[in-house]
Length: 186
Image 1: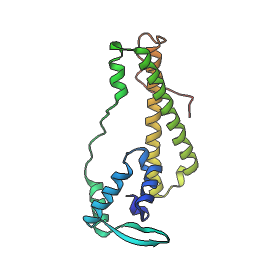
Image 2: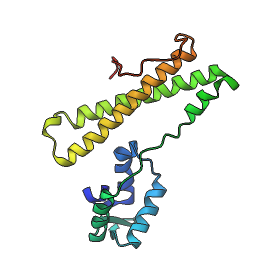
Image 3: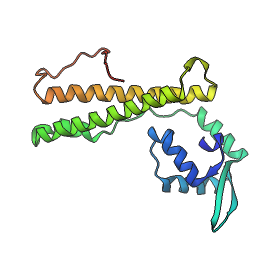
């Protein structure tokens, strides 16, 4: 998909990945290079060696016809809903078997990390999409993924706040309302 937007070297692709979809779909640089190698072997991408002064040739990848067809086909296939595999949840579940105060500290740390992401995504939204009503189709798709990330991080911040309050004893029944809540954060 990123190569459909713009051809580039593996390094350039990894950097673009880290700054966009990498927020929502993790892949190491090694994984990206392995995938490029496989996609080249499958004929989905082309690879052109570009000479560089004093350095090895740079390999520039671009989507080939079969790769564009595969991407279109992949977009039509059903995907499985995301499965949550969250170590913090397991620690919270097991807190009564160990140091609950350490789990509370970890919940607060996670809450801070999610708040930082929420704030970063909100800044990206304001910077990159100042007028959501005037988006091109490609911008709309990017906007929608970013909005999803914001909502996920907001939800995780609220959940960490709820868990921290319950573990701290400030919320003895440990049950917050199940409906939507208003928040004053980003």
